Length: 113
Length: 112
Image: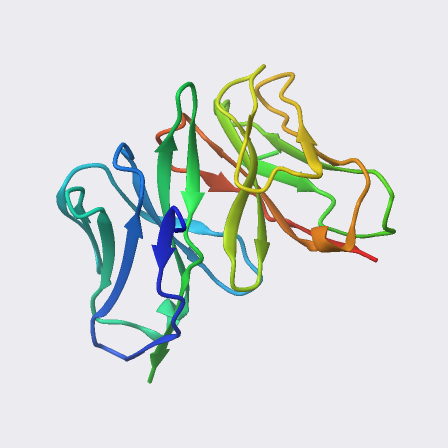
C-alpha cells in the first residue's frame, strides 16, 4: 500500500463545473496536508494546505480533511481551462526523530471548454 | 538569489560517472528535500533534512547521498550513475517539517 494514494485520472470536467479530487493516506499521525498544482514541465506550486478536520476555503478552492477516515480532498469550483494540470496531494509523515513530506502520484485534471 | 535555486538545469551524464546536483535556498528554511519525478509515479522522496547537520532517507535513497553542512545548501550526489536514475530532480525547502514545501525549478538528468 502506498503511503499517499490518488486516482491517476485523467479526470475530465466541463468548464464551469466542480472538479473533485481525492486522496487517502496511511499514517494516522500525519498532521499537515497539502495540495499542489503542477503544469507540464514546471515545478509543483502550493495551492492549499490544511491542518484541521473540516473545510478550508480559498477563492475557488476548498480543501476538506477527515482524519478519522484518513482522506483529504480538493474541490475546484467554476473550473477554468487554466485549471487543467496535475494535482498532487502531499502529507507530512512523522518518524521517531524526524518528519518528511510524502507525495501521491498525482491526478491529471482536464477542463474541457 | 531568490527562493530555491537548482543547478544544473539539465545534464546528460555517462553511466558510471559521479554527479552532484546543487540546491541552494536563501529563505533560511530549516527543512530541505530531494525528490525525483518519473512519469506516472509522482514525486518520490530520495533524502531529506529537517535541520542543518541532520539527514534522513526517503522512499528511494539507494544510489544517492546527501549532506547538510549549513542551512542554505543541500547537494545530492550520485556516486556512480545508472540509466534508471534518469529523471527530473526537484529540490524543495520548508520552514519546518510540518509546513508547506517550496520547490526549485528542477534538474533534468539523463544517464546514458
